[in-house]
Image (cartoon, rainbow, N blue to C red):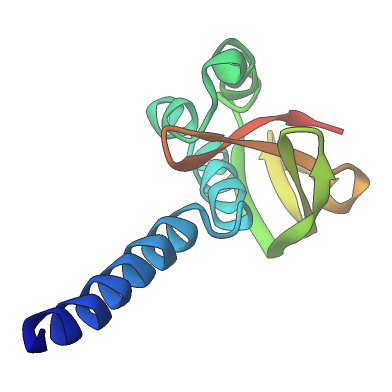
Length: 130
């Protein structure tokens, strides 16, 4: 009887910790979008693909190719969760990407659109724009 009294709270505690860990694993989608943006300005195709959902990978390759000849950096970029779009999480970012080519600078305002992220194998990944 005494063993049952000790085991039951232990099992309940372990179960609660397991569920909390699973919920925390998904977490916020915003860091995944920020990592995708960092890979984009670094012209890191592998990083962009790693942070992309399978459906977005071809577009990630196109986006990477558009920055190949440019020097790019992020300025004042922050991202935060902004809601849901069906199965996808929406992420809103502020700040900009600044590109330079032949001495000419261009700024890309990241607040102009929202980013879509989907949960793929327990990891948030970039999967388009809204």
